[in-house]
Length: 114
Image (cartoon, rainbow, N blue to C red; front, side):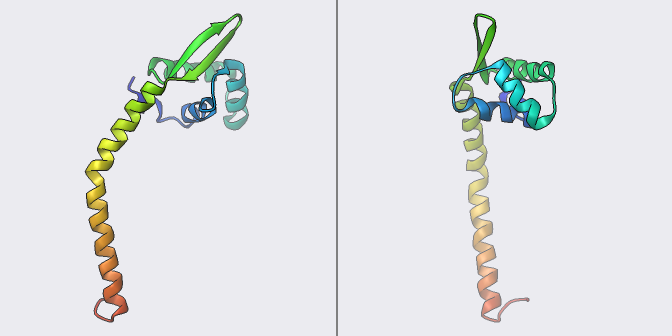
């Protein structure tokens, strides 16, 4: 699964937000998203597995506890994709903003439609 596909789910995005501050045990993550989204521990485990398979998080065993952490290189890949898309749309959006501003100026000057 591509990292962007994995990020399409709000529970998985929230899990990444929780992990942004550092490594956390699976139980803490399950409790947090369980309280917020009303999902069970097994459902949280499935979401964590999707994130792991997409390469967005890593998991290490520390005795009976599984610790999860964000994989920065996967987020770099997502960021690179966003920048490519932004580079495609930014000039068009800037041109649209310019045309909107021209229309507003023309209306204020009385030269355009209301």
